Length: 176
Image (tube, rainbow, N blue to C red; front, side, top):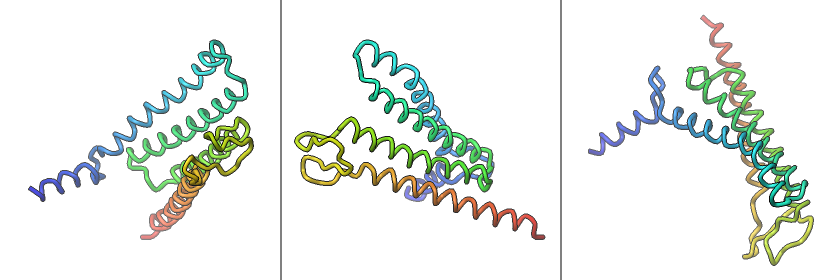
């Protein structure tokens, strides 16, 4: 029984020999759904928030910036997943895609923090305008900006690793 479970997981996770990979297909579906949601939100939210609820324009600007960066991240990840589905893994486009994702995540962190500082989205009782580092009710530092920086760094490192892998692959392809 135990061997069958391991074998089943192996079939689901590691099927790269021309067979369809469940995880890649699942990620592709999820990314497509989120991409459509982010694009539709960019078009719909300004009209449904600004007109009936009189939302200030500075809130809408930050909302649109965050949705645009989210859409760009999802678009790049969709492209990487599509290339992986076609067994085009060690190519420069994937390295560039991860580098772009890292830059977009870092910019998203900057926009998120600027939104928090300008619009003063701090929880009460610590509601102070212009705080770069925010603390929760229990006194712990909220890790918002650090999460953006870490994810951006991981994505940039993956981009550089893929860039070196492409270089090594190209050198090996030239070797007889």
